[in-house]
Image (cartoon, rainbow, N blue to C red; front, top):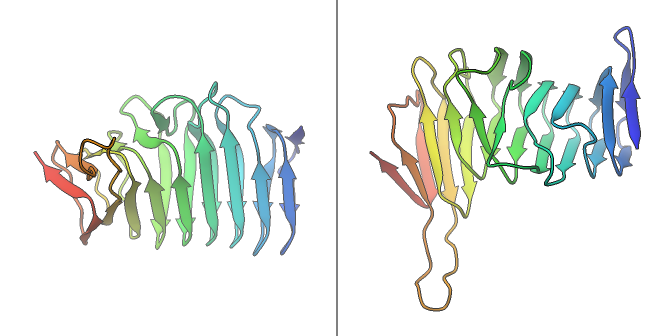
Length: 219
């Protein structure tokens, strides 16, 4: 187990080109900073959600969670390029700001939820966000109900081989939308299935919408 317990604003740094991997990551206090071309890989999270303060500067952060605990986002993320991957977890969604207010500052890079959808519920805490030239990816639903989420630029990408909902409740908006839903093989009787992204509430995309594969249905 790697426990991060830094006080008075101290942080754990992964230097350029280095890799830090652990079987289990337990956050108590402090920040994790991953620098250019560095990697931080946690095979499991000891905490019941994503906690702490993450600084990503052109490297890779990869978090895995077991099926008994969530990948709810209760951590601050400051990203300047790089890739932040989240795998596994319980439930259908990663619930953002579920237990506390947080900061989401993305300037380039990719935040990717590999196995869960994303929901920012009306009952959640506030997310102070500055999202520029970044991509938020999810294989599942993308549901934004809490006011105050309108990325200045960048892309929300819905991908993978499962159906998904897109709900961005007013006054929230997203800048650009990409849909890349690959078909699923049938069971030998049914034909290959094409996943669908369904928009069933009024949702605003300010810039462009691109459907690379899959079907977009607006109800």
